[in-house]
Image (tube, rainbow, N blue to C red; front, side):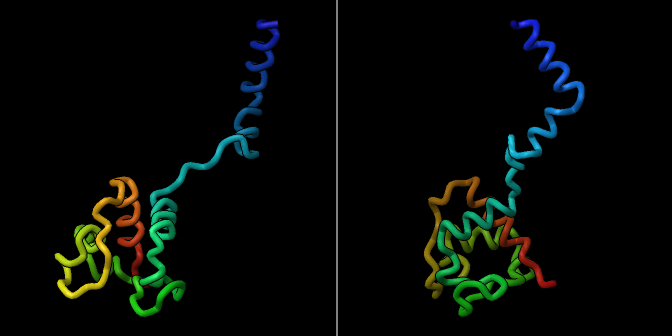
Length: 114
Protein backbone atom coordinates (compact mmCIF):
# COMPACT_ATOMS: atom_id res chain seq x y z
CA UNK A 1 0.00 0.00 0.00
CA UNK A 2 2.80 2.44 0.92
CA UNK A 3 4.57 1.66 -2.35
CA UNK A 4 1.41 2.27 -4.39
CA UNK A 5 0.76 5.53 -2.56
CA UNK A 6 4.33 6.61 -3.16
CA UNK A 7 4.10 5.79 -6.87
CA UNK A 8 0.77 7.58 -7.20
CA UNK A 9 2.11 10.67 -5.43
CA UNK A 10 5.22 10.68 -7.61
CA UNK A 11 3.14 10.45 -10.77
CA UNK A 12 0.78 13.14 -9.54
CA UNK A 13 3.66 15.54 -8.95
CA UNK A 14 5.54 14.50 -12.10
CA UNK A 15 2.61 15.33 -14.34
CA UNK A 16 2.15 18.72 -12.73
CA UNK A 17 -1.14 17.99 -11.07
CA UNK A 18 -0.11 19.28 -7.65
CA UNK A 19 0.19 22.93 -8.79
CA UNK A 20 -3.20 22.66 -10.48
CA UNK A 21 -4.78 21.43 -7.28
CA UNK A 22 -3.24 24.32 -5.35
CA UNK A 23 -4.37 26.85 -7.94
CA UNK A 24 -7.89 25.46 -7.82
CA UNK A 25 -8.26 26.51 -4.20
CA UNK A 26 -6.01 24.21 -2.24
CA UNK A 27 -3.93 27.15 -1.02
CA UNK A 28 -4.62 30.82 -0.53
CA UNK A 29 -2.41 33.44 -2.21
CA UNK A 30 -0.02 35.23 0.10
CA UNK A 31 -1.41 38.38 1.66
CA UNK A 32 0.37 41.49 0.42
CA UNK A 33 1.40 44.33 2.70
CA UNK A 34 -1.16 46.55 0.97
CA UNK A 35 -3.93 44.03 1.63
CA UNK A 36 -2.95 43.83 5.27
CA UNK A 37 -2.83 47.62 5.52
CA UNK A 38 -6.35 47.89 4.12
CA UNK A 39 -7.52 45.33 6.67
CA UNK A 40 -5.87 47.21 9.55
CA UNK A 41 -7.40 50.48 8.30
CA UNK A 42 -10.83 48.80 8.34
CA UNK A 43 -10.32 46.99 11.66
CA UNK A 44 -9.24 50.17 13.43
CA UNK A 45 -12.24 51.97 11.91
CA UNK A 46 -10.08 54.74 10.48
CA UNK A 47 -12.87 55.65 8.05
CA UNK A 48 -14.89 57.03 10.97
CA UNK A 49 -12.60 60.07 10.81
CA UNK A 50 -10.83 59.72 7.43
CA UNK A 51 -11.71 59.02 3.84
CA UNK A 52 -9.89 57.41 0.95
CA UNK A 53 -11.21 57.81 -2.59
CA UNK A 54 -14.40 59.35 -1.21
CA UNK A 55 -15.17 56.45 1.14
CA UNK A 56 -15.41 57.39 4.80
CA UNK A 57 -15.49 60.73 6.61
CA UNK A 58 -14.70 63.31 3.94
CA UNK A 59 -13.71 65.87 6.58
CA UNK A 60 -10.16 64.46 6.79
CA UNK A 61 -9.24 62.73 3.51
CA UNK A 62 -6.04 60.68 3.29
CA UNK A 63 -5.82 60.72 -0.51
CA UNK A 64 -2.28 61.71 -1.46
CA UNK A 65 -0.94 61.44 2.09
CA UNK A 66 2.02 59.49 0.70
CA UNK A 67 3.00 62.58 -1.29
CA UNK A 68 2.67 64.96 1.65
CA UNK A 69 4.29 62.97 4.45
CA UNK A 70 7.31 60.70 4.78
CA UNK A 71 6.85 57.18 6.16
CA UNK A 72 8.29 58.24 9.53
CA UNK A 73 5.81 61.12 9.75
CA UNK A 74 2.86 58.87 8.92
CA UNK A 75 4.02 56.44 11.58
CA UNK A 76 4.36 59.22 14.17
CA UNK A 77 0.88 60.54 13.31
CA UNK A 78 -0.53 57.07 14.02
CA UNK A 79 1.43 56.34 17.21
CA UNK A 80 1.55 59.81 18.79
CA UNK A 81 -0.41 62.33 16.73
CA UNK A 82 -0.06 65.18 19.25
CA UNK A 83 3.69 65.19 18.65
CA UNK A 84 2.90 66.03 15.03
CA UNK A 85 0.04 68.46 15.66
CA UNK A 86 -0.69 69.64 19.20
CA UNK A 87 -4.35 70.48 18.62
CA UNK A 88 -5.29 67.25 16.83
CA UNK A 89 -8.31 65.27 17.91
CA UNK A 90 -6.82 62.06 16.55
CA UNK A 91 -6.53 59.16 18.96
CA UNK A 92 -3.05 57.70 19.48
CA UNK A 93 -2.58 54.09 18.37
CA UNK A 94 0.53 53.45 20.43
CA UNK A 95 -0.44 49.84 21.20
CA UNK A 96 -1.04 48.72 17.63
CA UNK A 97 0.95 45.52 16.99
CA UNK A 98 4.15 46.29 15.08
CA UNK A 99 3.17 44.14 12.10
CA UNK A 100 -0.18 45.94 11.83
CA UNK A 101 1.43 49.34 12.28
CA UNK A 102 3.96 48.69 9.53
CA UNK A 103 1.26 47.41 7.18
CA UNK A 104 -0.88 50.49 7.84
CA UNK A 105 2.09 52.82 7.30
CA UNK A 106 2.94 51.00 4.05
CA UNK A 107 -0.64 51.34 2.86
CA UNK A 108 -0.94 55.02 3.72
CA UNK A 109 2.52 55.87 2.33
CA UNK A 110 1.38 54.31 -0.94
CA UNK A 111 -1.58 56.68 -1.22
CA UNK A 112 -0.27 59.09 -3.82
CA UNK A 113 -2.00 61.45 -6.22
CA UNK A 114 -2.68 59.83 -9.56
